[in-house]
Image 1 (cartoon, one colour):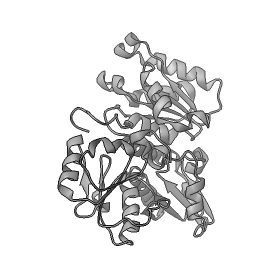
Image 2: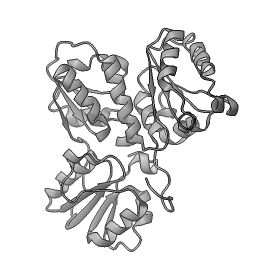
Image 3: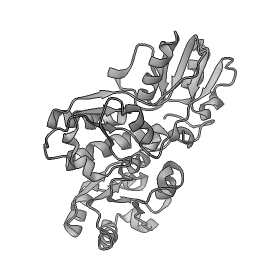
Length: 338
């Protein structure tokens, strides 16, 4: 986002998005920081922290360690962790400090692999972009590194990419699997109630369903590598009855598109807007990517909307709006689960 936030709380950043994808993969995830960024991830952006265990650590670098770029300390600490864990891989997630001092994360990746003997992925997140960029980076790197073998396709097996609490507001995959069970015999939500083994076996999927823009890049990789077809959609959204007129939906793009289809079946005219990724191939004419708080207030003021579906936090920017407001939680915005 651009400019100073006056009414909204900061959205989940890219390092939180990367950690969200990695959380249930079974690896050792090290946030390359002095402690503050890890606290933000665990305290605010990861609701599974109190439900599911994960080997998620802060590098715990002291100020001078971080400033002087003493990379060997991080690698040494990570190596000690591997001696007490049977994790299949390690991941290093960047934050603002390594970005500012130009830490060579690729070199850290190689140093870690040499020291521990484990495969390692280093993600060049920097805390200045939004969560979906970090998710995109993590999904793509995971499948690129670990989904290498072309296995026989299992008829009726669907792989879902993009199912993180930040996108869905859910800490488990039950609702997604239930919504898709009438058409598919096996449903795996990569990174939600599943781990690295499912990533390794991604080529077994007959088809992929991408439920957030952050998963498209990984889906294209799998299509290119294994010929696995994919489509974009969102299986779990409902609308109240009686909504009519011109409607604005503010959310992640694929949720917004799915909600639009349901609202249009009731005769509504719908615009989808968002502060996050808005991929051109999934946009309609009139859809809006928002950069500033003022973009939303201007859109509301000029759009003539009868109803708005959005996270409650956005209500702070809707002063003077006389239509109906329907709370539509987005965990990356408001920190509330569905």
